[in-house]
Amino acid sequence: MATGLTVVRLAETDEEIARAFPAMHQLRPHLEEAEFVPRVRRMQKSARAAGCQSFELDSGVQRFDAHRFYLTNRMQIPSHHFRLSL
Image (cartoon, rainbow, N blue to C red):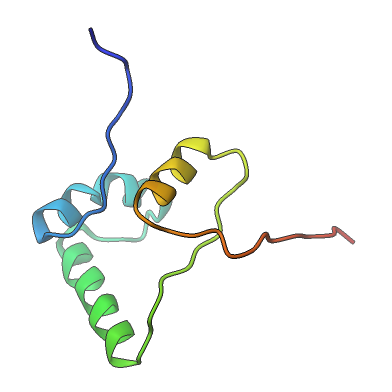
């Protein structure tokens, strides 16, 4: 019996990263498919060369599925982000 759930995994191989392009293109329309995997790999290499030891992101409080994915992939919630509109 199908549950209707989509399985989401961390993209690690070039092929997996390439399969993420359609979703990323919806979020960032300026991205070009031919340059997507090389760009991700350059960003990873640059971050490691700069001594970066972590990847951090902000995620909207309504994004329950995304949060489940992050927690499943060993990401931690080190703080909450608060905003006051002026």
